[in-house]
Length: 285
Ligand code: C2E
Ligand code: MG
Ligand code: MG
Ligand code: MG
Image (cartoon, rainbow, N blue to C red):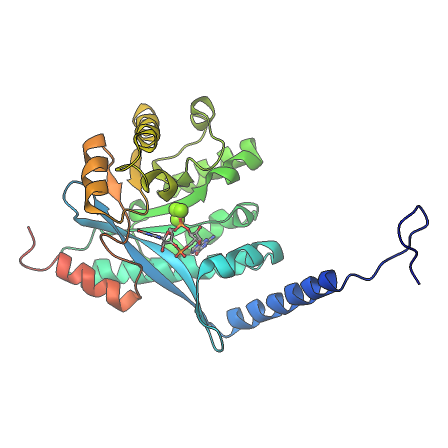
């Protein structure tokens, strides 16, 4: 039997570690199965022009249509997909589906030829040397105008290997796409350091938006983040807008775009295509 404590303590069986390892392995197998069975689908959430509320684009958001668990949100599978490397295949799939879908809206919906699509890229995808080729193929094969595609990356990704990241971002931008920093304000960026990266858009995290109309410190912080965006001549997107007074306050601060349940929750391709159709319909000015 294992002796309790001391220098010659030998392996003590810890059932919780065993359970965690089994769950990780099972999760991985299930992800692989789901990917092979084409269970991952894309939902879309509108992004609007802030003063007017006019729909200008959508963000593609992954969902897992699981045979037993139902519709699974990304918080429950993206991290594991990153740990196992499966995010590379999953991310490429999401990228292609979103480019093809939005290219179809641009072609088929009158007035919607300039609707944009934002797609999330994980740090793990960024480490793949064929990322640029993967993006180029998705653009070429779908026929989407690259200028209407935004790739969202996180602040923490920028910290990882600055020189390599700068090179990759330039290569992606040379394809014609735009780059957004997602969840901005939750990472560690400083003004001087942000200047090094070729980026176009700051997405201000919901955490900064939540309290702006009720807490003056929150409002001051949001204003500072917006000021940072302006100083760097970037567009800004406020995430997680749920109330109309947040919209008007952010609009007054000069935030360019907004996204949140106030305007629309993420929906299926059909639901959001319908919204785009109504939005750009004949009565729209
Ligand atoms: P994100 O990229 O910051 O996406 C915005 C998230 O905020 C979405 O959650 C969206 O549904 C949610 N949201 C938008 N407006 C509101 C609001 O007014 N109130 C509240 N409470 N939430 C709002 P979702 O779809 O669950 O995605 C969570 C995260 O998962 C995303 O955060 C993104 O980091 C990641 N993710 C989603 N799809 C992909 C993907 O295809 N690839 C990668 N790498 N990550 C993805
Ligand atoms: Mg995002
Ligand atoms: Mg975000
Ligand atoms: Mg966020």
